[in-house]
Length: 214
Image 1 (cartoon, rainbow, N blue to C red):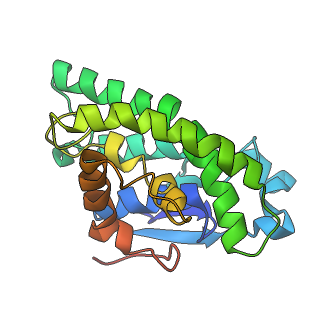
Image 2: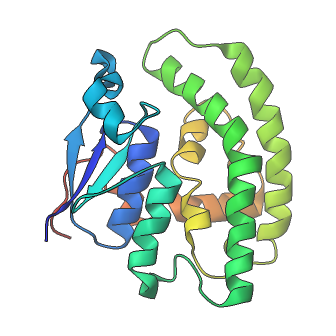
């Protein structure tokens, strides 16, 4: 069977999200670097596989899939023994609730602020007004997270799921700025620090790379 291929960029947020899940599940993969600075993600050939011209997409022995969360769900579904997507109906409902909360309550502000902070760290032009506007919104959302996490270890219960891991990499990206939004509430801090300590996240601190052995 052909090795799974990720078409993405080693430093890109969503490429790293997918690689983190692959590492969690010990799935070998090859990174096919897409040079977004040269517009390789907008070429006609690339758009045949990813019509929105975004990264990443995967090729799993001829099966093409894009959108990082969809990719992660697909990988976890192939390895159900991991428990990253619970199958028991109530546990699955709580997982879906937490995954929806990440997408609608965490990601919008975390991604906007995080990307501006990333630009600033790289020495690129950035918009401080976006950071100043989005961090308070995110902070208010994390108030609800803290209440949830005061009652359980993870966002969907006491077991790690994709819903937790979906918060990577934007949580750390936001925390890379001079703020304590991810750490000044005790339950959020405990949960966040556990996530960023996982070997799957630490494996790609210097960028995603082809990983064929664990």
